Length: 453
Image (tube, rainbow, N blue to C red; front, side, top):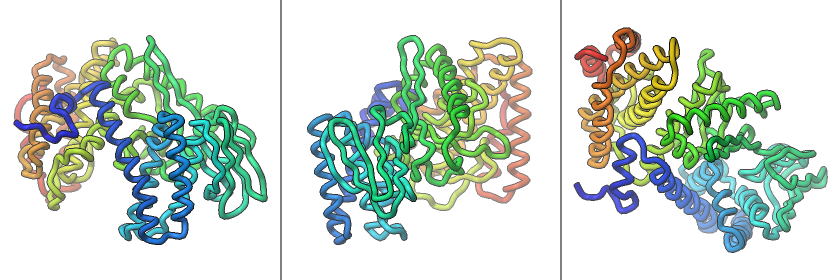
């Protein structure tokens, strides 16, 4: 079959489709997302000028500051523009300027982005940045509690910054990811094991951090933040030791963690389509749960980034399908995302069962048995939906081959029975709730047909 698109080499596409891809595939997608952010930020300036927005000249000053920072330190600009909330803000602003969102375009936030890049790059800049309530944010770094209204003046020089209004002045600490007087940082979340390092930020304050999610209001306290760090360090050890491909992909694909509320007391997680690199999750109960969350959500991050380059489903035609991990019927695109994410979940349990003993091993066997078959069932429903593009058909065929190969791996009979019982119970609840929905009959046949184990 010919190459999908020149933007995605066949070897990258097929490695992703098989479920992995490792650092090379994740780095390719990360570079593409950075290019997307760069285009969006530039479009903010161009659209503001085209629309005669009152902040267009201010945006032009910010853009020139970004150019100066790029010339001094390209990595500093990449770290700033690649930050998840920069992409969310830029997209929303472009859509508002183009009349496709009914909200006031926040053009002046480009100054906050430029100031953050200048601080990282060590270039000089004096620019007014907008306030968010009583604080002046520098996107990707933190915010200064300066008080006042309207805007604050950011004075940046030689890697230091001061933000001020007539009501107050705050100096950004030498390390902007550490709190200081009046400065609320995006705090670091780091882990290192066997020479492999993971460096994330805890984003518990930027307004665009996780669109649509039930985020935790306010910042985590010091004790809560330390619990997250402790779980992350142990989860990273688990991934590096036993799930090395996931570890590589996490380091390339996840930049920030956003605390969200647990749903019905259960640990939950999510990725937002337009916030590439951010992972929203409730307080991790233990390191294994966090390692599993990373395995799950990295799949979503990879597929979302790929989808920007290569659409895998046709436009939504209204059809809905059974997903063995959801209580509601899903469109083809949502089902595709779920199949790929639960391929990662099944793969996690597949390896994890060989690293533990006793009851934990029994649990891992049962979950592997459940997700390898339920995900294959869903993949077959998706394959027969008629809603895939040629690239989607090719991708899903490779994914399905991975899942089919796993069906022959032995699991204890008790695990197979538990997996079968869990699948049947989920389907029964789903049919009770959505019995007349499209895809129910096909789903029932897929789950009920054939042995498991």
